[in-house]
Length: 371
Image (cartoon, rainbow, N blue to C red; front, side):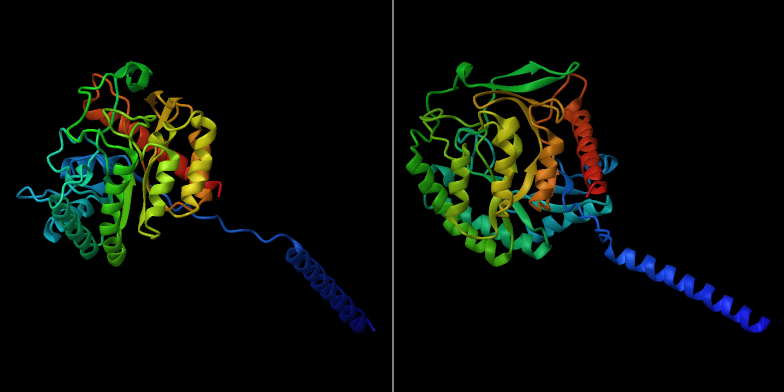
């Protein structure tokens, strides 16, 4: 009898434990499953030159692991050879850095009056066709070496600023105020360029470049005109790539996944009446269409026609919110500082860039933890 009671107690005890375990398991199955963190695909990047050992070590020091690189190009060519691209990549790799983008030694953000290779935006054939062929060669060489993107500009008057304004501490901020701007000359050597003429030249270029980029799977990233200028333009030139509507039209000229933007957030903010509230929907528009191939992550204080360029935490745009919007749209390429403040004891803005690297890196790490 005693043996029976002992066995019965063991049975009941075991059954109770099993029941409790079942209840716990049942409860666990009813609870909401733990969701895995959504990875942050964006990377801290930089486009500062030169891509030499000293500068690469500086970038690595501050956690920059992805860059737009500048190969050393011999003989005045408008494209880098495979060997020149490989040399740049090997040097970057030795410092733990990957080259995610490069740029040709023309199609820069300067005035055609300074540019020795301006035939594309001057509409000068047959030279523009030869320059486009050189760009085809760069595209093919990037494909061979595994550099997936090229950034470029299509400008006539170049970037415009009027002065430097006192900023935080002893820094100064680059400043634009249209009402005080004084052109160097009434016209550039391009003469009067209407909106229709500008679009014809842009379309001519895209029709001959984007199909080649698509064939070789190289993303072509255009930087918009900086800054926005209302009609009738500046120095006789309508800046058609200086408005949100203009860059919307630009991406529709070629319906191609390799045709998109070097999305300068600062420049786009300079197009807006209220950047602090309007920029987020602009990011969503281009981001949801996978047209953002690189981001210049910089801030301004002010608005269209009147602004200064600030540190990322000293402008009108909330960078925490901006980063969340890039994450929301699935942006997966570089975020890089640009047009940093200057100071007398900060050679080439290296201190300001280092501050921005840390700021952006901190935002990315925080966003990853909160995913």
